Length: 91
Image (cartoon, rainbow, N blue to C red; front, side, top):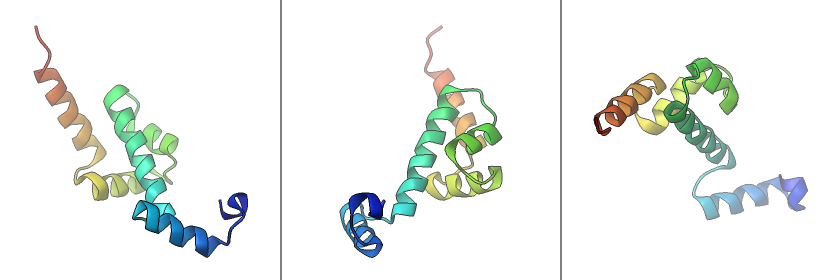
């Protein structure tokens, strides 16, 4: 990214942190978790498929990062979303 922007990597890192309040790595992980949240809500893909598509090394790494952001595992999130979503449907 720094090369593309024509700046020194440490300058990019400092400026990015100042503007976004987190490191580039933290931001990318947040984007990956956001993608996974959408997939968990909108698809029936397995957790392993979602983890791979989101760019995580494996399902364990995905679960660890997801839980650190949302305080629940991806499986717990999907179950809670579906339970809440089912209760709001009209018969």
